[in-house]
Length: 158
Image (cartoon, rainbow, N blue to C red; front, side, top):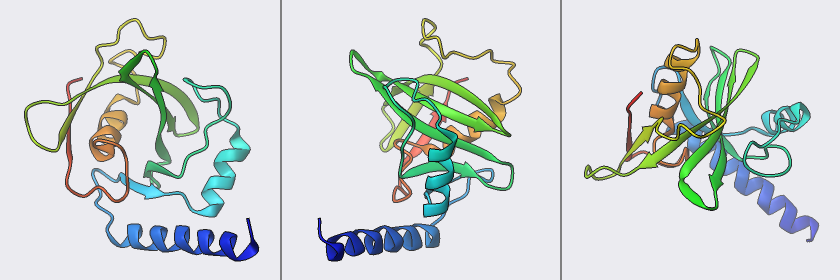
């Protein structure tokens, strides 16, 4: 890769970050946002294990409530069970791997997040102190957490 190609890639990321920040839609303080270079470095330095794949989490965007120090990061899906989605919730300094079943109800552009995968090791008690924040983060995450998604909606049934 040439230096010019690398510079264009960095400019493209900066442009997407700037455009995304202009379109922010907050849900209870949460937004889907591209990580800044500083946030990406901070996440890498934390070396958080990916609960579904080998290695550490390495993402370009997340669902974040900066004011309350809460981040929801999609980690992946199980190859044998593609409807199961795995996340890491960074909640006020704590790390919580969590998982949900992703369903598409008959409502257009809508996803339903369910806590039906009871066999998962990343299930959490419904009375956990972070549940309300996790629910709000998933409502903001919508279908895929993309900062560019302004049309989809989400339902949480927990």
